[in-house]
Image (cartoon, rainbow over all chains, first blue to last red; front, side, top):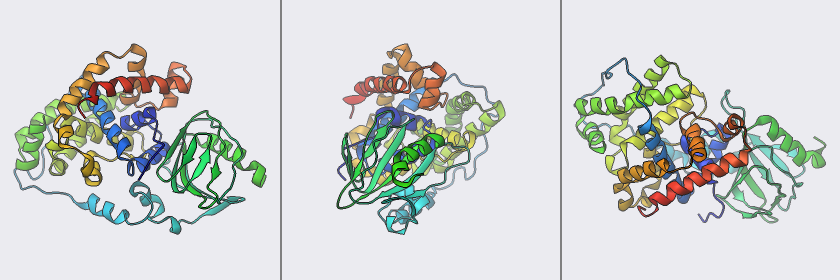
Length: 217
Length: 177
């Protein structure tokens, strides 16, 4: 996969640190699963985590060491996760996301949001305040110019779109905070993307700004 | 430390596991406390981290990377799951190996321990303001927005400080790739 637009290093750092809000983490994980360059950067950034962990002052432990099962036994490999991953990788939805939306984009249940725009919200943990959803935009559909209240991550899963930053194809990520942009879905293929925002309210704001002229929402 | 991990993986060596535990569990506990866990919860999570190492050691060969990076990623994901009660989207390194083994070069893996040494060195030379945002992210578990709020800075400033820090760290390990 030829990827032209990657996740910002500050976003990757937060992801590696385990501090990125869940919704944004979903987009980064999905991008990482198809982008070997960002996967390499992530490994370097996890190495930063291990350096930091190693430099923390040790806390005193009550227990010397817990007893362990199967001591001295033979090697046992828990294959469960890998088998599951292999099954999930069959469709056009990248593996991390397929747990939540199925393995094929054609199987997604879309809800109409407005003229030429459909969405499919993805449920996050109760503790998370963010917003995560799939968005499907008809060929040639022009979005009203809009900005972002907080960090917003968009990854293209099918088709493409174009804005002031360039053309975004499958696997590409737009990592935006306060830039204003005006995306247009490809006139032949349209566009399906995964879009995340760290704040629910802000995302609704964005949505309202996006679709008010179309739907009176 | 990778040798200890190999001992655990191949021979299920309890002494090697104890050594790993003594080296890392107290630091993982400290890490959990920084995220807001009380001492008991932090100790439980530290134990669970190391027990995961014991359970899954066979999946993770020491040749593929450093034991500390693996322990860090296990602890990080537990922290997201138990303390933040969110879904950790980050895969553990064995997941990477499963899907990406073709882009790991032998030279790269051998240098993992050296890489960490270089990272530590590079971090010790970071300006205070850059080190601060890196530590708030990794140790205190704060998001970019939370760091911006805590330090009373624009979000963009937090991100650019992180980018600068990463650039310096990356330069320090560049020639190891």
